Length: 229
Image (cartoon, rainbow, N blue to C red; front, side, top):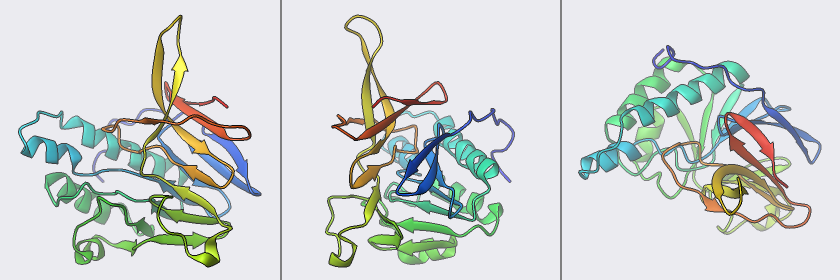
């Protein structure tokens, strides 16, 4: 198995209860749905570093490897029965990074690997089939949750009351450090009717979210989950 030689200890996950379900939020920017033993993550953007390099923008190769380290590590720690990526597993192109992931996936084992397609998942369906990925074109419903990439997409009438778990916007929160200084941190966001997962990839920016009343935000910093609201 590749990428296993530089593990660092993973900090204890944070338990968040939602609709009678237990969600273990990880500083690796993914979460385990305990009742179903499903590891859920979003916006991995495999191939983004390769895409930038192909366009003459120097990007450290280690960024992609670090993401794969973290994914492997999370799987090893949580030992899920299934993995679900809520969109944007890949970043448009079948480049060298995607080929490395293809091999990593084939070497890893027989854990069912689901992908709800995101706007960047544009490779032919045969590529995903060859990689052993179970593809869902728009959403996946597993009570009480409806998993989809972008919560702004049209929701079927029969799922109108489901709680949505999405990705897409790469949520972050602005945290005050000292005086007038602030820092933007990736976060998990849980609203009244939907949640937004942080981008799993470390090669992404963040879109600041501002929690309202009865909404929950958990920042990710220094390999820890920090409740903000």
